[in-house]
Image (cartoon, rainbow, N blue to C red; front, side):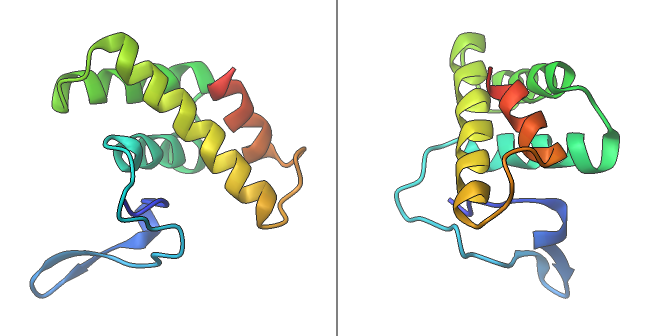
Length: 108
C-alpha cells in the first residue's frame, strides 16, 4: 500500500507510471485504500467536489472496478478519509485546515 497515492506522487517515466514518496507505505496495507485516497485527494484538490460527492464517486469506483460490495466500498472510503486525516494531524496539520475538515465530513 502506498498510503498517499495523490496525483503528484505518480510520475510518468520511460517505462510507465512510477509511484514516489513512500513515507506512508506499508507492506500489509488494506486493499482499496490507495484507490480511495487517490479519488478523495483529486476530488478535493482538483475537482472541488463536496465530501458527499467524493465519497459517492470513490464508493462507486471501488464497487465497479474492484468488485467491492457497495457497503464495503463505502466503509473503505470513509476509513481512508479518517486515516488520511489522522496521519495529517500527526504530521502537524491543523484540525481546522480546509482539507482536514473536508476529510472529516467524508468520514462522518
